[in-house]
Image 1 (tube, rainbow, N blue to C red):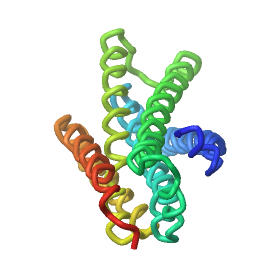
Image 2: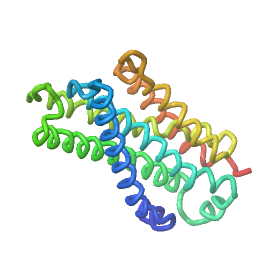
Image 3: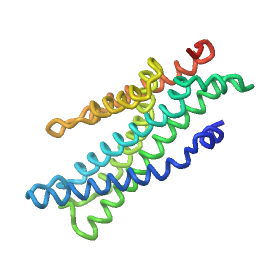
Length: 227
């Protein structure tokens, strides 16, 4: 079912968008680095700071990207009532919705995970070649980052489902995407080095909220008519 959905919406084409997003984040990191050198600042003073910046940028980018996918494969179908056609197929409505939401969840999980690994790796390679970070990377720091990336990927995947609630309320594509922007902006906003995402309980709680929203949507899909 997931393969059919991806083929129907040509979602494999998303890979090009993912690559563009990663390159854009790399360009932004490069810009920050050279801007700091010009202004005699050092945002890249430690690996912890760099990894946090990368994590925030990746999470923001792909949660918003995921909301665009939700808007395309779910909200637009409800808005245009084309979902009615799918619901007359001899396939359970729940199976259809599970397939759609699984695509969103797995897309966010995989892209956040791989993007963090790639960008972190590029920073470490650049540091070995050009001595960008004055701090020495230790195995303890590396393992801590691995666990942080895993948690970030799972929590982002759950958070990416939250805009579904707002989109389904009004069957509005803009409302879906704007809600995603507001959520990740709130979680990732930085105040004197402090972010809400640094409190592990918050992204974990939001992840569970997203999963609950997905579950409620799937549970009610058989009884809620398309209007």
